[in-house]
Length: 222
Image (tube, one colour):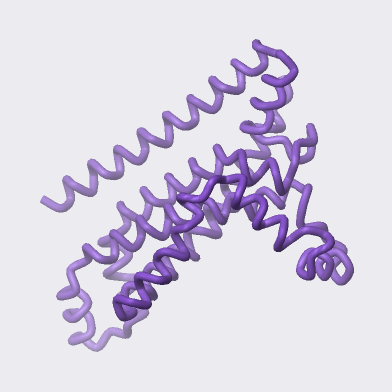
């Protein structure tokens, strides 16, 4: 059994999760401070990939990054890098679809944070950055970690946008999800079942992790 799809899926999900972890936290921390009308508008824009069909997300990425588009043509001509039909193309798709989960979870954690703790830190002469990293982040860590796990699981299982922007090439761009589809199309029932079981097992582990983190968060709040 060729394990490349598993390796590639985990690699893509890990890189994507690292990116959305910091981007989601930064966006959530900044947006909750904005006026309500602006906050509402940005919230819609940043959460939109969560409700859009993955194929629509994939098409939009092709419009943006395709080799005949300005950004894609510039990257290929100046940097010598293709932005589509490579394994790292799937990272772009995974970042877009996983970001809303990290952002929404981090925002919920920050909005439930007791602002009196921030004020207490400031009265002690601590900077906003110090209060954020040493007070706010530790208090909100369970919710943020849950968001990261959900983002990783979403990136790991991404199919629609990934298949459009990265395609399916065995040993190069294949992921678990695209491999399941290709095996099913070729009537390879045994191979399809193997990868389905791998995907189900991984998803179950991630969901159990999220449940554990949520249980610990509720326990810590009592």
